[in-house]
Length: 223
Image (tube, rainbow, N blue to C red; front, side):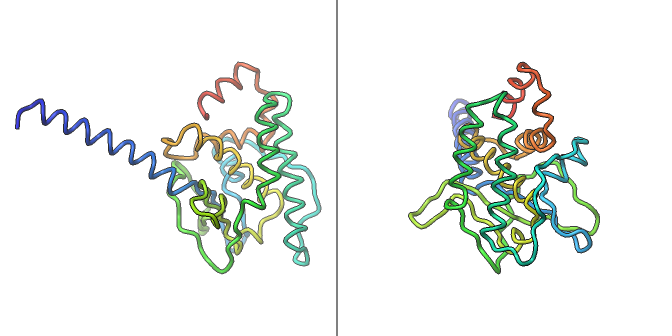
């Protein structure tokens, strides 16, 4: 076999492998994670990372804390209210995304399957990260385009979701809305690090302090 043929085979192998990797990542979906600690309960990973990695303090709309007697519907109503407040932080700087995410939020519940008494398979897309000692990182949400008539876009681990405060649940929903756009525009992306940083800026409301040029550069890097 001559060198030209070998070179062509190597190029073809790498091309197929790269294309297959991108498809595989999009196929297995995105993973939204929650930190589970015996002492401190449940914390959405994006909130913890915003504080520990970037030094950004999340600022949330104040709502009545979720109680044990609340129904699933009542908890979801509070989550939607907090999430919409987060989305509204984009209104002045990026009206198109504000409108898009607001629409996606309205259909989020009907596009979700809440699965109880089950642990979701881990989706290894966290990238660089860390958690408190003695805690575990659990799969909270898996998102991917529905493949079958009875499938849903978002698969949510109800056993973890139920214990989230509305603020943590809202951070998780915001993560998934951002990922929904990133996955459509950049299916080759290997981790959710960039969109989590974008989410950290929204959660802390630092997004409102960016200049137009700074925001455009952020959009370029994330999307």
